Image (cartoon, rainbow, N blue to C red; front, side, top):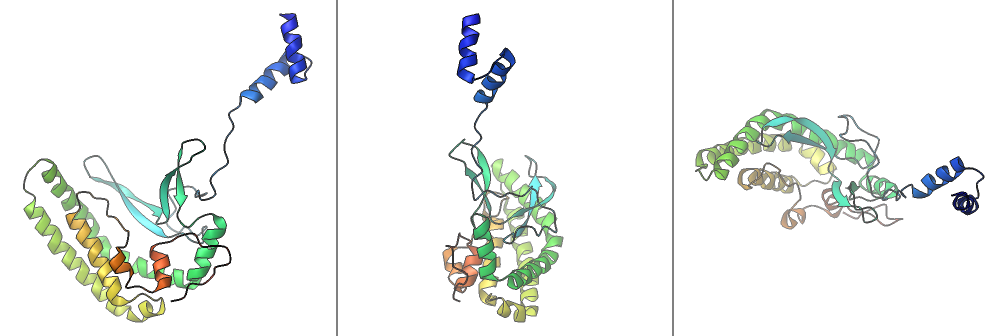
Length: 245
């Protein structure tokens, strides 16, 4: 036993048994791989008035239980998507814009004042849609329940269609009233209407309460190049600080 410890003393360059134990424990500590450069460094869910990240794009999410009943609302970022870390096989919140420098470039390219105006318009849109949100989710839940049970859901589907048309009409009124702002931030009014229509149609027809917010190619093509970067964010190479309209 003594010879064994002497070998350990020599191996770890220590003089006593406690030193051997400490050195062994340190040696056995798992190596924690560095965080991916595109990992979101901020705590989530985000506070409603979050402004720390220059490329942050607020997205309100309604949390549901297994019966599709609303539990509450929270805030996340439109740029986040789950990704598996190759080094330790864990999942993390990846920012599609890229690392910290890329997020700064994205915000600079779109223009900070412009992003603030887009956010103000989004808040106005939220005020219009808020009264419709809970009834829509409630009837969508009932539609899915009936479909999962193999029963007709025609009445719920018709209600959803009529209600989303009413909501689209309210949104059209807002867009017409804010036409000057839309021109200023390079959002064509007709393309914006089409984008809203696609989103509402998906709410009625898709077999899920999770509405996909990706912009179809044919709708995206109706926006100028700089707004395409807004709707489909991506890392910008170093030195790129402007996208031609």
